[in-house]
Length: 156
Image (cartoon, rainbow, N blue to C red; front, side, top):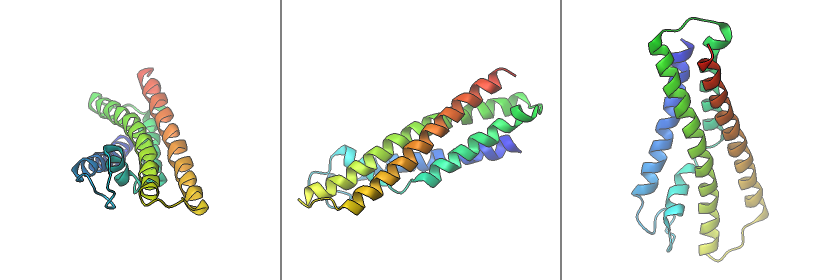
């Protein structure tokens, strides 16, 4: 059960990441937010603003569940091992893409202020700093955990 639920959680996050990328690539030049010079980084970053720390925590929980059979010494079938291996690689990749997407999301929001020639209020800077701490910190944990579990499962 831990392999299935863990893999399912990783799959949900992976689908969110793919959806964010598709959304970003589907915007026209001045979209989103009617930015006149909406470059590719702006368009790709905007959808990642909705994928916050909660998404990363779901990824971490999925990796933890995938580690349980190894920690508990439970026997797994070859099919379960393959599923877990794919899910762990997907989790590591999703963590990296989400972290990069978070950087692009903050850039996209600062880009809107720059385009409108307004200064960024201090509370907005604090908000984005908090967003980055949550996403980058949890992303590093998710990536590290996925790599550790891959190594742990390989030693069994």
